[in-house]
Image (spheres, rainbow, N blue to C red):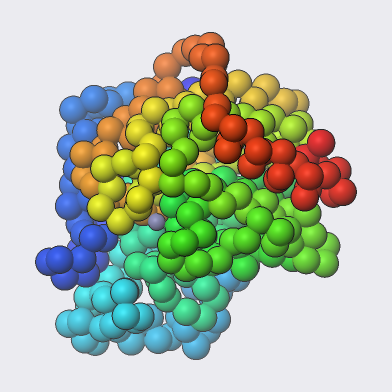
Length: 342
Ligand SMILES: [Zn+2]
């Protein structure tokens, strides 16, 4: 696959304080890994700020005004866990724009897969509220742009960050154009994403919340995604697959309490390549969400880029534990009436 990326030193200007986990060093580690292993193998898609109109499709004008005002102060606390610096508003604007530009490059066939290495992250951001280290909802802004600009009707969003992406979830909860699938730890922030929350109105059935167990192994996770995504992609036929790519379910992450390794992220990416041979041939869009151990972050992203830039390797045989097979059965039972996951 031709793989495009967004990287820009201006994302490092968003400062959160020396001891905050969402630190510029996260991107430093990723950019170093890119230079070391993927030099000249990826297409750089330049980042430019999103337009006000694009951000206003998701966020309220009063909230956007509040974010702009933060440029006047050295430090602002947008939420107890979300301190920002005077430069942060611009980084947030640029992160959303980098994602929009990624959609353009996928739709123009400049690349078949795109990864936005940006900060601040976005999946917790609500229309009028910053939280969980997020300012603007990068995935939601890019998905809405794909719908508005390219008349895309079916977007599959996979969110494998250990935290539930309550922002993406709430924004598209009643919208069948975005099918949101999240695996997360219900006992962690923001404590949302119950398995029986499936969407509402026209969007009923288009939200798949999968609370996972901390004991799950790579095998369990890849099996779970295989069993859920295979029927779901066949039934929904997405025209675009977006991944809210957080890496805090990695065993070495200081915030997440799970046991996964980078093999999960490479494994699910390989799975997506296997499942993609549809008439729609959906392109892949990834954007960075959480993940706070620099080495785990860089290694996890390396496995994804290795899968994306390499040939199609066979899926290894999986031997999931009983908890994973039970969870898959439970999710399928809840979603059976909607007919997408059968
Ligand atoms: Zn997270």
